[in-house]
Amino acid sequence: MSFPIPFVVLLLSLWVACTSCVHRIHVAPLPDEPSSVSIPQSLQLIVSPPSLEGADHRPGITLLKWSQSDLTQAILGYLQQRGTFASVSGEPGDFTLRVASKLFLTSRQGLYHYRIVLQGEMSEAEQAVNSYRAEHTVAGSSVRWVTDSDRVPIEAALRLALKDLTGKIEEDRRFYIKQTEKSAQ
View 1 (tube, one colour):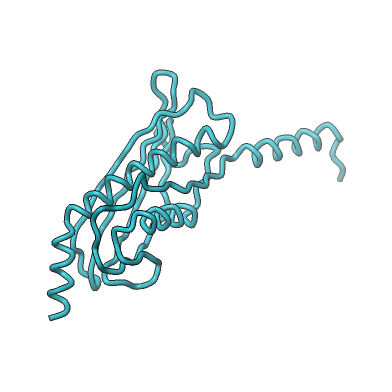
View 2 (cartoon, one colour):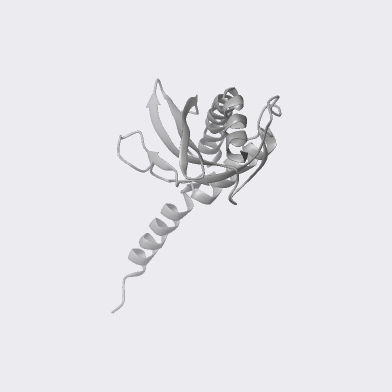
């Protein structure tokens, strides 16, 4: 069975257009400055896959892919650079921080808006200790033609949400040091 050449060209063109237009997000947010607060404990980071919700209020943002591994590396890199904890890795530590994230894409006043919500749960020895929520919205461009039109505002919103999240954890520094002293006794 053979297909007419124009039909094959059309299908090939559609396939190339659909696969090449996907914005694969890679972010590497860095803190503005290292933390002035130090918690002399190790931290294990566990990150859930990012949840994406588009401007049409349905799950998934068309033409945008953000992998769990990229999000994990982004948050891990931020926390390591921030220096709040003595060490941060995916390996078991004194505390465990589980982070769930959601990215909302909306369109208002002619611009796309990227809102990141981070939900963090701090635990010690499988016992929940504290929960934290941080969210930030950043306005992007009026069009999403290239990957950077998504990547730049997503990275900015993630950086600001991580700044809020780590700031809230740092405010509870005394609690985490007391928890560790109780465990040592």
